[in-house]
Image (cartoon, rainbow, N blue to C red; front, side):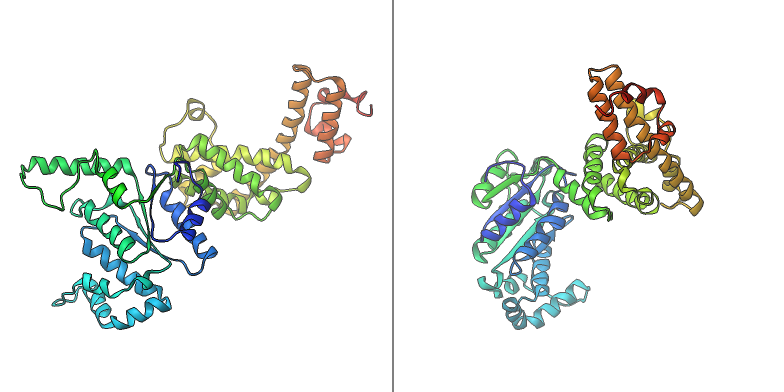
Length: 410
């Protein structure tokens, strides 16, 4: 596999088409690797191939090989695939004991390796084991034990394994552990002690890892979050709204997915209780323009609320009062506030109409639009906004349209 920025569909197809492989999905913290796996890859694997099953293991804070093996055995049991069920029936008493161990029943000691060995290769057929947050494991759990288990699953059980990690952070962790080891002046490192951080990944990549891909940006994850959280039923505007939110997310929120989730939840509230009620199909362009302004104001208000770094123009910009009230009032506005906001938003749509006409006039007066082009542009705006001639004065100064009246029918 070449090292490009893969989409979920590429990874899904690869894991369905290939067996007995170890795939590393690596990228920076906050890039959305886990979200992409859980909400994109894992769900799509289930949809595309019902025979494929995923066992997800989060290594965050895991301190021992035993903890990981225990979780794998229990989750394989929960899958209840017919092939695996037969194996589980054989070891049902042991699994009950294993659950007792998890509940803290004393006096029970189980050899997990023996339990694990009862499972045959065919029991793991079509199973994908995913290890996430490898760099967040406890220092007490050596990396080579994790990689040894990966190799066991791949070579002995013939199942596919996915490792989700941040290679840079893992290397820092390994270097830290090595420095602690040297500080303790241990002259005889054991087999379980950590590899030199300058070469451990390359060594194990050759022995255990078959393919590695890097997630370089979180555009796809961000789009999925917006699509999942945006409950918008006006289909002819949904994709444009998704694009507006994605654009501002990239510009203003520094690819912070946690803030994007909050933003989409807030936007969904305002859409449902206010903005969507002002939609008119014949003023679609103006509606989207007004909506874009409110979304940007909402992001600015979120930055203020969460004390995030702001640009100078944002620091001195006006406050989106209702968003400020919403954020400080358990994410809710009362009925009177919503009605007032709805009126304000309706006025913003009219202002957007004025802005569109004004922009066309500026292009004509200060730019290089010909009389005919200007007249045609105004005519198109009149058609698109469905404004009767007598209503024009309400939306725009008459001076803007006077120059084109003599050309409007030419």
